[in-house]
Amino acid sequence: MRQAISALCLSIPASGAVIGRRFVRPSGAQAGADHNTLGVARADASSGAQVPVDVLGTAIVTVGAAVIAGATLKSDANGKAITWAASGAKIAVALEAATGADQDIEVLLIPNVA
Image 1 (cartoon, helix red, strand yellow):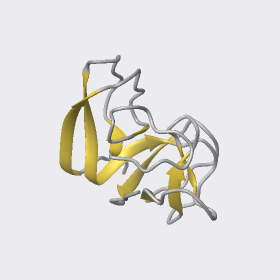
Image 2 (spheres, rainbow, N blue to C red):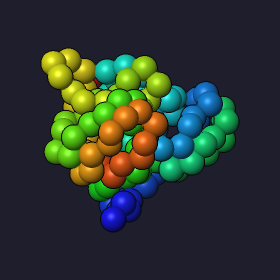
Image 3 (tube, rainbow, N blue to C red):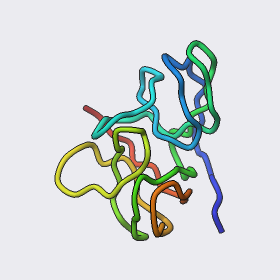
Image 4 (tube, one colour):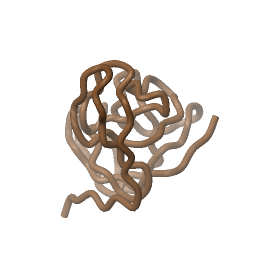
């Protein structure tokens, strides 16, 4: 069953448009390819608005490509989860599989640093 069990959710100001269920940087910006992240936005937010971000625990995230359960994930250029292969920040582990892009899955968030 897909669910989000947040051990820590922070409300931060968005530093640009943020799309819910995508990775967010500590600066409040939507994550890009290979970025370190703070967590996953729970909702859409416009620049300057507060956005709730799941930081620890599990979260629901949109994928940018097919992933298998158990895969280590990173952010693509649009803040979506994709399988980590050889570079970029490891930011989550897939708890579910997805057969293609734009599906939502539950992930276990991994604290990451630059």
